[in-house]
Image (cartoon, rainbow, N blue to C red):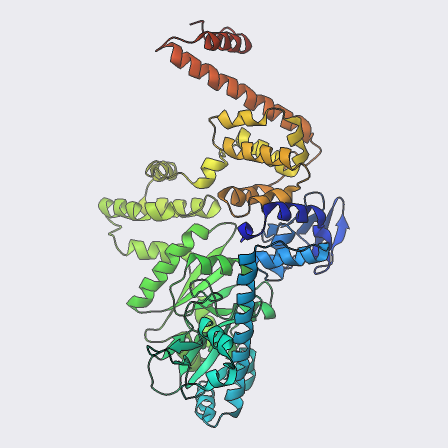
Length: 588
C-alpha cells in the first residue's frame, strides 16, 4: 500500500500534520504536562491511560497497548485503509495525494465496483419487500426466528428467481454489464451470454471496514444446490481477508471486549437476534493470518466456535496453529465447542440465548485446549510419553512471540513433563536453530537491552540526536545484531532531520524493521525521568565505536596469525594497539 504513494510525500505529510489535532477532533484531549490524555477510544476504562505526544507525534494507550501515528489512529479509529488514511490527512493539509496513471485508473475501477455493488444491495433489499416470490424467503427468515429489525440491521435481501433480473435492472449498457461481471454478480456462459449469479436466494451483503458492500453471500430458498453461495474473488473482495459482521459489531461498540468467530453469516445474524453481541464469520473458510490480524485490531480476545465432532476439533486445531504467532501484547484466544451436530444458529434456537451465553462463558482458553489436545496423544504416566509431549510442543511453542505468554506456556509444559523449568527452556531454545526475526534485528537480554537496542530506542525518542554522529556509515561494519537497523535509521535521519518518531515508524511501516520499531516506540524512554538523553546517547555511540575498533583489531590479529599484513594494515594494527592498550595484543 505504502509503495503506491511516494515515501517522500508521506514523510512531508506527517511533518505538516499535528496528531493532537487529528485525535482531538474525535477524542477530546486534556493537557497533562508535555503530553495530552484521554480515556482510550479502543477499550473501556474509567481512568485515562491514552496518551498523545505532540513532540513524538505518537499515541499510546498504557491500558490496551494501542499505539501509532496519525495514520495508524485513523486506520484504527475510523476503520480506514492506509491509502484512505493518507488521503484524509492530505485533505486536511490541503495537499493532493500523488498517484500514477495506473493507480488512478485502478482507484476509479474500484469506485465503480463499490457503486454497482451498493446498487445491487439496494435492489435485493427492495425485492425482499416487493417481489411476488419473496414470501417464501420471508417465511424462511421468520421460521429461523429473525425479526425485521435484525434483517434490516444486516441489510438482508432477496435475489428473485429468473436468469437475468439483476442484469435487466442494472445492466443498462456494455460498461455496466462488464462492471457487474467484474463485481462477481454475473456469470458468463460459454456462448458469451451472461446471467445472474444469485437467483432465488436470501442475500447477505458483506461489508468492509468502511461499511461498503464488497460482496454477497446467498442462502438458497428451498432445497437447491449449493445451499450457500458466496461472491467470487474480485478486485474488492478477497474471502481469505474479509470478516462478515465486523462492521456491524464495531458500529455498536468501537472496542468490543471480545469477538466470537463462527463459520457462516446465518450464524452471525441468528446470534444477534438472540442478543449475543460480537459475533463475526469467516465466510465458511479456514481462519487465515489476514483474518486474525483484522480481528485482533478490533479486540484483544477472540473466542472460536466449532462443532464438537472430530471435524470441529480439527478445524479448531488449525485455528489454534494460525493464532499462535499472534499471541502477544496481552492478546487472548479461547475455544468453544457445541454439542455434536449443532451449529451456532441451531444451538441458540434450541437452547436460547442464556444457554448459549453459558456455553460461551465456559470456552476453553487456548493454553488448556493446546495441552489437552497434545496430552491426549501421549501417555503422561511414562517417561517416554512425557518426552514425546515435549517433542510435540517444541515446534508449536517456537511459533509464539517472545513474552509473558510464551514463558507461561513453557512453565506449564515443565509441570506436565516433570522437567525443571530452566532445563526445559534450554532444551526448547537449543532445540531449534530458528532465531526470531526480532531477535536478529533488535536483540535484548533478560537483564537489560543490548547497546544497539538502547541506541535505537534513544534515537526514536529524540531523532535529533542523529545529527551528533559524524560517520554513521561506520556502524554498517559492526558485527552485532541490529547494527544494520541502526545504520539505516541514522542514514534516514541525516537525510530527513525533520522526522519525528511517528515519521520514522511510518517510513518503515511495511517492513520487518517497522514492526519492531513500533514496539520500541512504546517502550519506556530509557531515561525519561530527568535523565540526559544526549549524554546517554553519546556514551552509547562511543561504546559502539570502541566495539568497531575491537572488532577490526581481532580481524587483523586473525589475519596476522595466518598471513602477512600489508604495510597499511600494519600501520592500522599498530594504531589500534596503541588505542586499546598493551594487553590487547602484540605487534605482528
